[in-house]
Image (cartoon, rainbow, N blue to C red; front, side, top):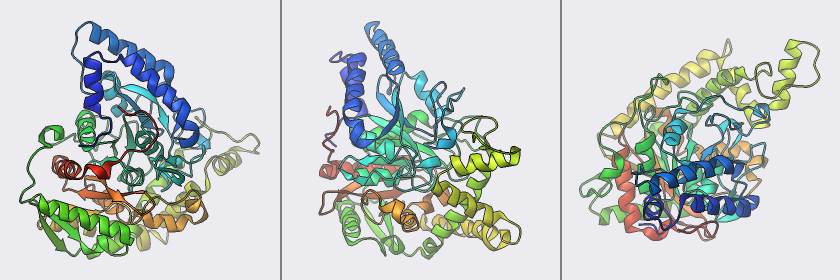
Length: 488
């Protein structure tokens, strides 16, 4: 197991009264104030409500009441998850000052368990980006080297968890936005099956791709958080909840005989150090009794264009609601209503968001719909069927999370199109609605983390988390902590 602090460890400290929840929370708030200037992980800190919750947990402990698994654990939320009474901006100028009047289902679940919310964390504007640098607050930094990005779009959560200024956090994954920053920051990120976790209260980017999931320091923590938040929700028409046995109870199952597949197309074109680390992990799995199965998956080459056509089309529709009339930013000077909406959207959205809205509007427009959107939808079905066929050959697919390690600050802004290619390994999972978990599998020559992902069939979270846990147990040195924050 990783030596880094995890949920069970913190819970045992609280239950054993070795530290009060108020003391623990204050220590995290102090660390945030100390480290956030460098990491820029948090865009809003909520010390008052955090300490109020901590005192309620301490009272339960004093009264001898049982605690739920996540009770009293200091955590964070990505700034596109709605929080009643707490500003939620998606790190966009256009939502500055927007305070939701309701909680997202995932936060409602955790709030009822007395999870301690330390604050809201940084992200690429409206979750559109791979570096966190499209945020109107500036990008979150990588805790392993602050000259590098934390990744995106859930970069703030990954920076906070990897920087040990939150025990865990919730992010969202539309095309890799949980797994990619987890890979860059050397931690664990789980993208659940589409529908396993309610999207109610998640401010939408692309509704048929978006999924909320945990970012943690260990596989066990990811399983605990996933089990807590994967409840059926009637307010989300796509919600199904978790399927089967809780993931945290099956982590120590043997993987002897498990078929772990490697698609050649996932390995081709990735950087040499990443390829070597992933293939090295396959050797570890062989030593644990798993069978490595190589196969072809040629449809992967269509994944990136299919994703960007469909996701941008959905974004152009979802972001049409930001008009300056009902809430959020509004242009100061305008001639009429149409001019007000045009200026509000031009001034309120950043360049990357505008780029994707324009692309999405274009592919949906008359004359181009059949050539782009309809064709992409048909290809989406082809990709889904190809993965179904792949899972007749193997139980789990092993692949790089990202073809590279974290790039330096500013690279994504100077060449945004090039950064789209970093999604090549992650977007197929979102296209198909499959679960995938990213875990560290080594470091490059400069000490930056390398991540691999384990992809499962629908609702096979327990399977991929167990496989990830076995690797974490066998190679704990891959889960090296950064020098920031609290060491529990």
